Image (cartoon, rainbow, N blue to C red; front, side):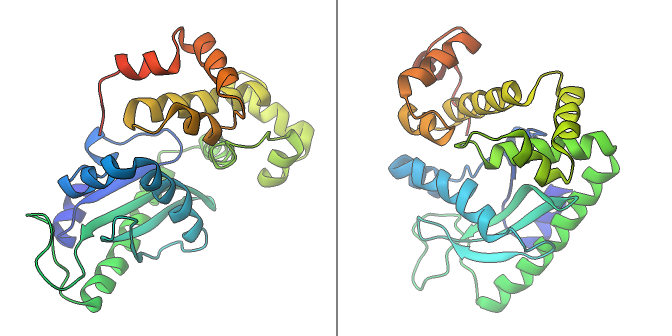
Length: 250
């Protein structure tokens, strides 16, 4: 479906999944020459924009696409994918060149005007709704709640999430929320939160060049040495070694 939508829009599509239900690798990240050049210059800035700032902008934009400029100065469209009121992913279409003059890279599409972008933003919002319907059709109540829990923990990587805070987000009592977490994941909340942090850190190590210290802070570890110790206990090797041994994924 995403390939067909990209052909209709005339733009490259990319899907950022926030629940580990990963689509094919080709959809994971912007991998055009111009995006790779921007990431090489400051990948941390791109990461923060794509995974933190854009989702915040789209928090109440279900069914809508939004046109914006990325930190590198290119124009793209983003549309949120929601399930049961929870943001589970973001669809990106682009990037393209909106300024006058020749685009700086061959193959970088130059958008004709704002109306052209607005039409594609509307279409992308519809695609996002269809993606959500397909995900929902394959999910039972347990999967929906699992998605909500993982999304909440992912949104609060840099915090210590309490059972009461999670319970409030799920509209459950603290005792019921604690039981649901153990029932769905086979571990208590503290262990699950730790697992989410380390899995996210491992993914960033494998897919980006962001400094290990910055990854540690993003994932809620104030001490890089403590992060390294936790990572080594989980994966058997230091974060830097893990990055060296994993094939670079873009």
